[in-house]
Image (cartoon, rainbow, N blue to C red):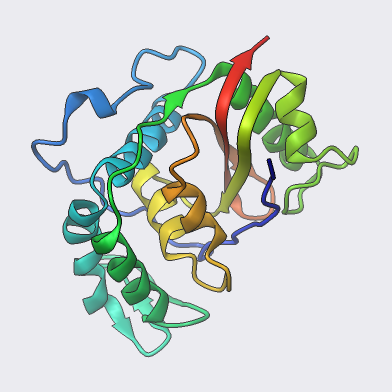
Length: 222
């Protein structure tokens, strides 16, 4: 059992990715749609994660292939949006597309209230005190927060994005993982061990937004 301590600072001041609806994604992937403790964006994050996990190749073809045209060296322009400077240029996007097109389907993620509470605890901490990363001001780690609200087993991890405004944008940036050498966020999204996830999204005093995602292989909320 392990927990991955990694973080991602996404492209700051970047407007949202377009949330254009794509037909025929199975309705059962939207496992969080009836979870009242999640707001609409948080529900959509789990939906996007399940879309990637259920059909990685299709997700790459529908949402990532088209992003290649937005690169000019290390500058990236999403259609109709601001140009931003990436750390690595197009390389991690191409790498991500290649990985997704070779990845087998993964089990769906089910929403977890306890994991969402753990994610929300870090979100509120950084809303109050600012900063980034996985360690709260009181010293709590992802594992301690996850254990505070329930019992986990097999595996657990935490992802964070800053500056993303839409569910698909959050998931795409985690998948591309620009500037993160081990691509740990991408590995978390594609990890077949995980069966449960919790999400907390809100404002951040330094980076406009924060989204925390906690994962576990097994989880029982207290």
